[in-house]
Length: 249
Length: 310
Image (cartoon, rainbow over all chains, first blue to last red; front, side, top):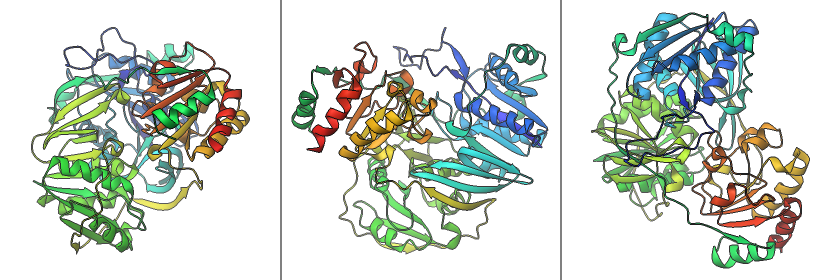
């Protein structure tokens, strides 16, 4: 069974986000970019399935800037076998990403597509579900546990207030939650090896999918600022403030 | 403009998320219909009919809908979607699972997690875990999920008619096995009015449990944790608050021994009142806190627990 893992290049989660003063977006110049953390978990899970003998090949795909090659190489250093990069100059919305992935699924015929539950830049949380709907495959989102057994997968998903266990007939779509695994740190030999792994680069527009955005982003603004707080000197003072001033006790 | 809002429920009770999402729907403007889909959820449909501003409740009841699996619920919504300009759901686990499917099946882009309605097709939503706000417009038919903490609940003075709707023949490639609900007296983290969180400074799971849990219980609060505390194994993953964890918006958030990494702060920005207790006066969390208490958390937190228990 082949596993397809889409990965996104996003601003590193430790970087302070700066909104451009002209409202045109978030500043990405000279900012550290990394693989979306949820996607890294997806890659790790796919590689573990391969190491356990349950998958034959792990193929990663990224859509966007040519610089996303770095993200694909990172996934290869974790253990992915092969990469595909679909380049496009502007941001591609989840719906178009899902449609591009449908094309790749038709080409590659994977038994499982594992995706991050959301990207930490646009926080949309849509692509996996959209891909599942377009393919007519079963979905399990926010997976905290994934067990593959023959032609089915049992997934424990995090839901509001607890967990939900689902059995999916393969092929299927799984999106990852943080607790699914702790991605490994790539070793130097594996980083070097990753540079030689096969990477297929194509223009996203060559796949015959409408890539024009459907939503119009009119501006991006700073979140409302919090008023500055005060220091209290004792628990007693804190309780008094919470009770009388903030009225939350 | 006609709007269909997917009601959030567990076949027994209508979740408060629905009344809040209804407020967002009414701000968009138009005739709002509520869809209650499940099995044996007649009481939920009745409760939904009492929400103010609902023109009609659509009640879909079938064994196939018992667990509201996304594959089936999305097919059901698509089967009635023709009559509506806006399809909307609270951004709960169910809403997040179902609505992107509906959008894809209707060839629409979803607007996720709106926090404000600026016009019938104009919305604000947080990106980068709330570190930036995206202002976005749709053209025509739209699929939306609502961050319910951003909207007040609608009143319950309505008396809408309930219409039974037929359920198409549904089969899902996913099979429900079980729901494992964590049995706890504590409120659910993302909708809790009060949250007490602990960070790496707690040092161990034993100390986390001994220091944080009594304060949470004294306040009737949910328990949260920083990513560091979760990575160290002091707290389970589903307690994690922050960019890669849960976003909370309680009336009171108490951060104990949390330095205030960007990743954590992103998840608590919408809290009404933030209290930080930390021994390091330079900790970034103090920049965000409404009330800062500098000192040893192992003394101060138990003292606070005793003070609020009185």
